[in-house]
Length: 358
Image (cartoon, rainbow, N blue to C red; front, side, top):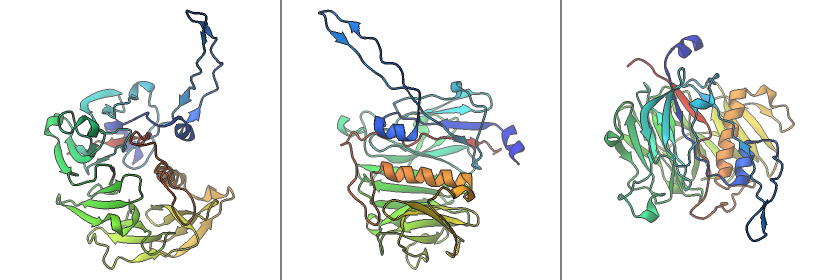
């Protein structure tokens, strides 16, 4: 199956915004060997100026739509910018595609992108352009648009977001079968979220509101969305929401609150991994999809039993939560903000999709 996958044309979407504070970027990147301090240069007037610039290497991971890592990429296949523009490349040849989408990602609220089922296009976050808002608001008011490959961006369709808050931060996901799109909308960095589901018939359904205290929503592989709720307990419970009935009414709780604070979840085909901590140490509890605990992976370095892909996914979600500024055990503390010019990288991970015949 993998051989067939790599014989098909593969599209790589590379979206990078290097607007992270140096301290946080260092936590996500491998620092190169320290460079020797430059020799002071004599400036006019007898003053010497010496500047040390750290060199940071950023690790980038590119996966196909089955989660397999793509290898053999060259530096020519990547472009690092500060303007939040999406560039598309054919991975096998490295040839750039004509589709260039501006204003997808910025330092205020990040950005996101999710492919449709047949990879003929993708949903993306869009910031307003000049003349659409005042200059002070051009880095706010995210909305969701759709781009069909090979068409001009002037034909991109607006889908959702006109009623979102000014400081909305949107993250998009595609279900395992590509038929559903999930939009998680954060009300800034305050820990409030609302969620919307796009069904195959093209209709958006809002199934949570800010007041519901649903802090995470993740597609499972069993036609369901798994939610972390802090409504009944600040430590978090895990709910299972069927895709054919996206409503919180009578939704079952499959993992009740425990001593652990639920930090992130990862549903797979047969297991549900719950990363938790109790004020410091973290562990992973493993459940079946009915909520029966199967095992616990303690915080003593024995997590080798957890599949590599699961460890990576849990770590990425954990980092996203930390970038929102949360810490602590059973309660959340104030967001670590940098004012309206908060800087973050919301897409250090490239995404590639296999182009399937239409």
